[in-house]
Image (cartoon, rainbow, N blue to C red; front, top):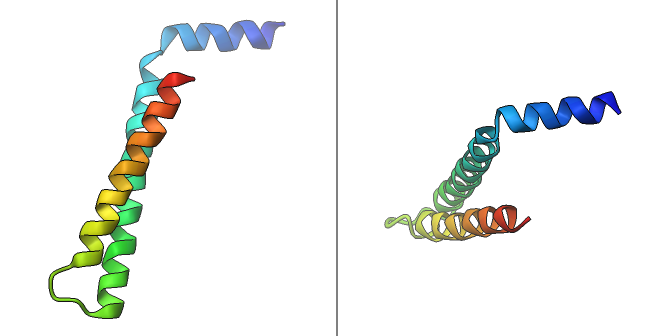
Amino acid sequence: MKKKQNKEKIKNKLPELKYVGIASQMMVTILLFLAMGICVDSYIDTNIHLFTIIFVIVGVVVAIYNVIKEFLN
């Protein structure tokens, strides 16, 4: 019972941390897709960084999807 009360106290004191976690998750997702795009572009040796652009767009879409899913819960 005490553990549950302690968790609720912590939640009530720092509700902003939830949003910091969501922002961090969004940043990591986009950077991961950026790194994958750069790797694919260097492997295929494209001149216009096409896969980097595509992967970043997909990363942004995935990150926004995760944010919306988190807010609805």
